[in-house]
Image (cartoon, one colour):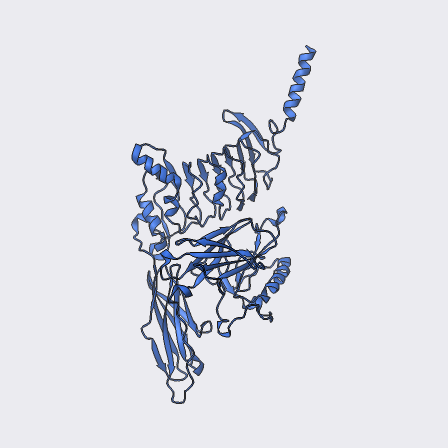
Length: 559
């Protein structure tokens, strides 16, 4: 009898101290049922994923626990995990390897967090995932190949986010959609896929045309949880359902002017009028002698959904105001311009006119606008658009590497693609990335220089959750202090000045912001660099023509 008692005590002690079997986290509860062992943590102040989670759980539910990020291998030791619920936390960042080791995961719920982006390639580690719940986050972009690694989903919820424009190709390229569509037509019976996209601020212009048509035509095996998707803008389509609107194909700007040659007496007020048709709406700038005009008043009036009138007022004409003025309009498809000659009627004027502005008439001189559109913990996503004669056949080259490296890595991008992600960036490193047309070498205005920050590990520093410090001289972004960006058109002497300024202001808790200005392809406001770099007197490393100093650099945008 004593021997049996001793053996039972030994077994009990062994059972209690065996790691990953019966232990439970402090402040949480553990249960066993027919689905396996479960961990439930509700309204605790853990702040981060515990490292000592027992290994035998099949279901983990951590909610209202103030989690702020999912680092690499967050649950990699819990290989049997099938259900993971992390709802109603404050998760802002999700590492690309945060789901590493979860080959058996079938359900992931991240409702009610603060995610602005998701590293979609992370789902390569969850081949059995069937349910993905991302509602009530802040997602504003859904990349074209976002669903590539989700071939077994039966439920995808993206409702109550900030999605405004997405391509129908997101779903057309979904392997599950392609497979299920064929199986449905052949066999008549296939598992349905529930898709929730409602309550997003859809911008119903030409960019959403394909998606609207896809939603109208959607049929089993795809089932919409709510088929009444509603437009938030533009004003003419706000609060209308998708089935009530008709959208036209996107169109590059076409600029014209009622008068292209104006003669006025000295001292008179001149009004130059430019009429632009475009879908979607363009950004319009006036240029004179290769400089963007900032001192004169330009006003825009919308005539209809696709027509805008821009008027430039030149008060009290002086001799220096004579010459060729160009109204230039850009949208993501291309650009167009019209020139207006201003003459002054005086017999004593014999000085020659300023040189005309060269037109962007061929792909060799195509304008490329490049920006940093997204950032993850250790990477960035670039976006660009170029005004070319034939966008469907235009390919690009990305030049990427350390700033001081003479040889950059070259990546060739095919037609129709305007984004690229770079990962595994090193901390405290200065990088340069350029986008060029075809195999041309980089030119001024086609590059962005940025510096990565040091790794952030202290919990109190995670409020910003920013890995990349972007150094700005060309533009100051309205984002948390410490994030700046610059282009190679900006003065290189500004870099040190900006870094020092960032250090000083971050100590005082200041936030660098300026007068807001909305861009065509932007989702953040930007301001001029004049106040930031006014004190810098060093000469730039790259020689710049005097007449080009008025050209603004490309802004690097971070979400």
